[in-house]
Amino acid sequence: MSVSTTFATARAEGRAALVGYLPCGFPDAAGGDAALLAMVEAGCDVIEIGLPYSDPVMDGPTVQAAAQQALDNGFRTRDVLRTVEAVAATGTPALVMTYWNPVERYGVERFAADLANAGGAGLITPDITPDADPAWEQAADAHALDKVYLVAPSSTDERIAMTVAHCRGFVYATAVMGVTGARATTSDLAGPLVARTKRATDLPVAVGLGISNGDQAAEVAAKDGIGADGVIVGSAFVRALLDHPGDLRAGLRALTALTEDLAAGVRRA
Image (cartoon, rainbow, N blue to C red; front, side):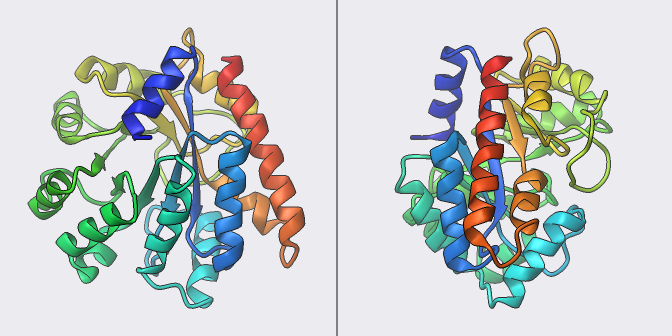
């Protein structure tokens, strides 16, 4: 199933889509795959697979710790393709979220071709804008991959319009200024950002950065609230595993419970 179809299905059901993130290879290769499949089983509609990187400028301490653990375990860029294939085999769209440097080093065209061959849906690129490197646009279009760029509360209306014109799949709206990390409350910047973005595009708009429980997910997805088409959760999923070091079974139980809570939240909205 494609990302566009998944969002359309969620909309037809009167709810937002739940997008879940984990770094590839965390807590280790086998455990990471098991964790992502558990998230699919428990209610994630779309999976973001993070590509661990040694200079993660946007990541907060929780995601940094997980990515570093994967790197310490010997993660290599090609490993993310195997994980994409495992998730895609379930019928759930799998996107890779990555900083640009690893893609450039791998080879842009080669990465796009290998991602498409693995069944990947596309790429989320947090540190490049559509006008930064035409090579990705060309490679993504050639291999029918989604291009997901970010808009932020600081983005001007003109910048939002330019960004969404190049997006395919959905638009990633960062609800807070700063690095990633679960927060106790949702940002009051999210609502205005979603409204401005929706004025510029018919694509689904998904909100990420800071969501950690079902109540927050419901608030973000509520039509009379923020009104996001998708709820993106990352750090809270990572924390569920970090809180159970060396005990994958307990970590998977916590991960499943969190996913079910979040999935209920987007439906409650």
